[in-house]
Length: 305
Image (cartoon, rainbow, N blue to C red):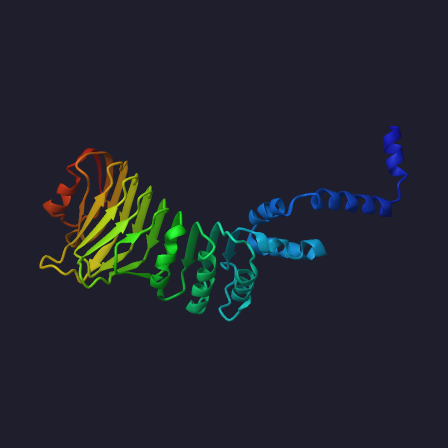
């Protein structure tokens, strides 16, 4: 037997356990708290919080995490409040001055005011990435929170949300915007136009969205590369033709995807020179005014569904 192996075998098992424990403590106790917080931020939030039971020194380290991830898709009992109680506790106790991301996926119904309380707190900490997917909430109005979205780099809303916009909407840092089932209202009393100003936006996605009380939507995004619109429509358009015009001011567009069943309610227009476009249409009869929107592209891939 090798001398080192023989020596290791002579060490009592209880002493081995103690030595391993000491080595473990030495490795992690020497790490800076900021480094530990970065490591914990990579874990699901529930797991990060559970590290508080490891030792007294770890009790509050989790409160410095910068990425919050909550998911109750495995909890199918609407009467069980453990999930919302947990989110409430974490958001209330978090100590980080800067929150990078807030991810919430829920399949259960809970009080809408709770969601607003959570978002209000994290948005005050220079939040950059917001992803909300709530399948079982009827309608959520994000209108009061919209002015707080200025720090966001990425915004994904997958819920029946309402956005009331009464002035030009400027989100100076937003690079990725994805809306599903959103209701966008033009609340301006002086203009029929809705101006969305996204100076650094690169990707715009909208599906099953509706725009209300708007003659023209102007999406001013000089760096926009990808524009996708899937089965969106408009309601209560304040012009005789009842057509909502969507003007996309983006000279760097590389991909256009459009699929809808009501082409007479939406008219798209793009810059005069674009490289490529992918266009998906339904089998309904499309007016020439709609198809003229795509005469600017160099090449056009057309799929009729």
